[in-house]
Image (cartoon, rainbow, N blue to C red; front, side, top):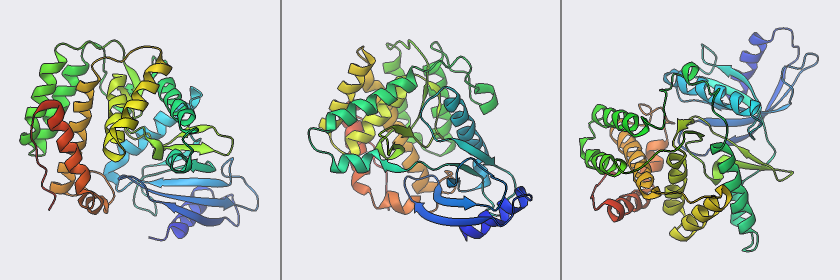
Length: 336
């Protein structure tokens, strides 16, 4: 697929008053499981199509992901209106187009990912970035969601009284639909534990908050990317996901440091986080099992995701070991 040619065809047809459209692809960003991302510059002789020349196109795997593309765009618009730090999203396309896939065009942010910065940060500089990371996370969870567009996004109305019930119903449906009954004992463990856990508030979550999804711009401002998993649920669902990823991809010490930093910024203790870590483990293990058994395209991910997962067998082992440590439930996901 020629990205430059398809962009030129699309923009020429969509904006016929713009003459001599010039496009240069400046880089391809391959990160995560979901989308293809390209940075490009756009110039014309007359009409300014977008308020920026430096842009990003985020292309989803197929038109089966129309809803997810639409929802990411709408959530980012909502966040922008709340002055939460996200790129300015400029165009949503979920109908026929030269890419034959849905996509979003947004402002490019010059800077580095937080992971790139952390890899070269001094030991003295780490606490600053960890605190800033936690501040950005807590700010998200503290947003007023009274006008969050659940109906427009086709999301269920989650409340403090129905969170665990809705979670259990949706997860059980997901597991059975994908012939993953062997993971049901984990869900049973969660159901039993949740009967003693109180949900105090519902927050807008990111769904995959980690250093690769944070850009630090040239002024040191944190900008949060990748909102395709955003929804309103218990904030601990989000927090625990980040903790599990930190534990699996880094280490226990960094996970504990992050959790302490989050509590410090929040100004309160976070209770029952272990239950939500098991929820995160079930989510990750079920993702992996679905991709390996049915293929990445069925899961709405890039074609190379299956290969990526198979090359990370040791990470799957870590997930299974952590699950056993917390629940004494032994699960094996066959990788071959």
